[in-house]
Length: 450
Image (cartoon, rainbow, N blue to C red; front, side):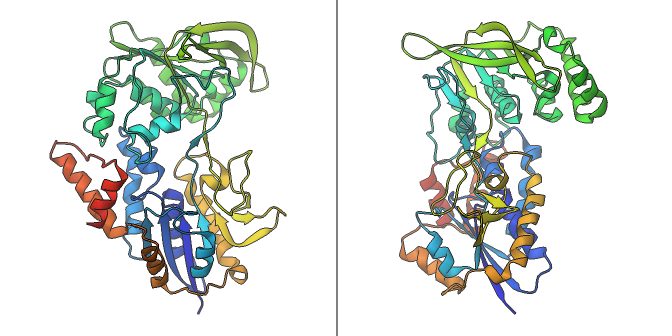
């Protein structure tokens, strides 16, 4: 019986789900799976892309941990594809590779002034407050009034983290440097802007409801945004999620505001036009045009231009994938070109042995759970493509370990992750907290390899 030696590059949910699905899939061969992850710890965006005050979402880590702890998968952390291990190396030691590297860059926003000092990408801010080891430990939080551009869950996460009193984050795994940075923030007002109406938002009812539960924070909505058109009324009647969102907004509109020390303003029908700057090139305001429904499910400009004084702007208009060495890349969409997970070359033909899953395959859409069905599609093709796998010269499991050792790569393994995990939990318990993340990469590696 043939034994498939499979490499998976990226140990986030997409990569781990792909490994789990393959192990449980009916197949006429045995399988041996190695996960390669550029960070010393696994779980990808679940660890470094979900706000620390979302323990319900982070509960998915328990399921991912069960997969890794099954004993059927090896993990090599702190290994960078294209640097520590190459495509030629993978071909020498494996029959195939699945890339599940996700999308971690901010999508661009073509707007005058968007590159001003005090203008940030939401993905970078998320990486900072989640303790990502490869971003600076400090973040400039000097603005009293902040704009967040976007109407998805990331925009609400960013707005909530900025507006929330940092003391209320202490029960979570927020890193110490992040808590101290937020504690020094003078912010009083956070404005969230979306170009369409409140019934066309991309966030979930859970995310929205959480905004209204923040201590000492008033949520401000504007009656002019709730003169619904026919399309919005139909959405409320036909979509349960939209029905709940409408109910939440209705409750907020009836609330008394004005007593809280911080305010979170939601602006709809607001099309970004310009980031205003002062004489020193720093953000001083946000200019937008009021829009209105166009009768076809979209919006059109009204010509009415408004401005809000802010000292910082965060764009939360989506994530974007990053190219990988020696792998085709669609620069327009930020994905690896593929057919149902089978990677396609420049001639639009399948590249033997190369697959993709998750956001690097389909773009940054859908929730974490969507990666399961995504991985199933990719794995199905992998199983049936047996005739086009690579023919590795050194498929022995020890060979890749020897290769990394010879190159001096300080890789971490599953036992190392268990040590780091236990260390972080112990740090938290000492202060009555869930955990305290270790942020510096070298410290993560030292603890993992101790």
